[in-house]
Image (cartoon, rainbow, N blue to C red):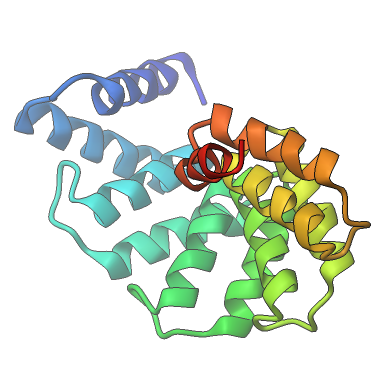
Amino acid sequence: MNRSELAQFEKAHRISTGRNPNAASRALAFRTWRQLARAGYIRSAFYLGVCYDTGFGTRVNRRQAFASFLDAAQAGHSGAQYNVYLMLLGGVGVERCQSDALRWLKKAAASGDVDAIRNLGFHYHEGHGVRRDLRRAAALYKKAARQGDAMAQWNLACCYNDGDGVRPSARWSSFWMRKASANGHARATAYLKAHP
């Protein structure tokens, strides 16, 4: 990305993260990301997908969102890989396909996307689309929990409470429950209030 393109990207990013951008600014950000995505910039393809998915600067078009996310995902963007998983799993903008969804989830998790790591743990915990493996689920929850993911912290606390994939431990269950609560997980907070 040359300096001019970088400046354009940064301006579009400032618009998208700013407070209440006007319609003309949103449209400018959309056009910028579309232009940069066509030039092969992965992050721009990701943000273009976000625009199509949310209607930021353009009309909502879930098929285009999926196509943009897929372009970025194929180039290795972990957030796009996770979004491709979500869209394939839910059949949003594309025909539903759990096996393809899980393939993208695994790629996103391998790339370090914390949401993907946690959700892959959930698939192993529940046996959704994969053979149930409680040890692997707990290990994935722990990996995401250590990165500060409140949902993973809650899930790991439940694993320690129930002995799912780990040796039951009230101490570790409490530890991860407190972490989840501190990170804003409402069910963890409610659990701690009910079990002082």
